[in-house]
Image (tube, rainbow, N blue to C red; front, side, top):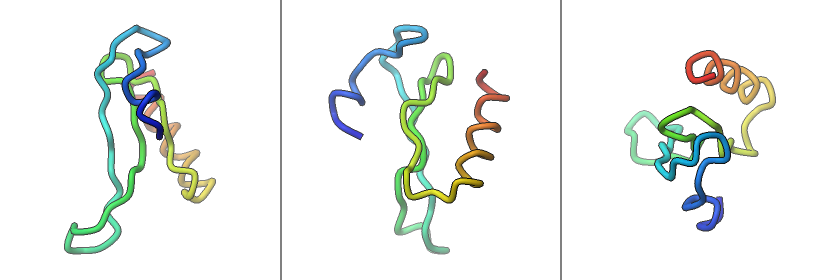
Length: 69
């Protein structure tokens, strides 16, 4: 995700506050990769990791849209 995208306002609500979710890669929680970035207010999803399995990405988007949609 580019810095310009990270500081950009949400197209849905205009807020600049975002939450970054990370996916842990090992049991010791020392290695992680960016999973999603979403708006703190309305839940608009800015970024989903492209290296994710398509089924995992679909499931994550469905869960997030149920909670924040």
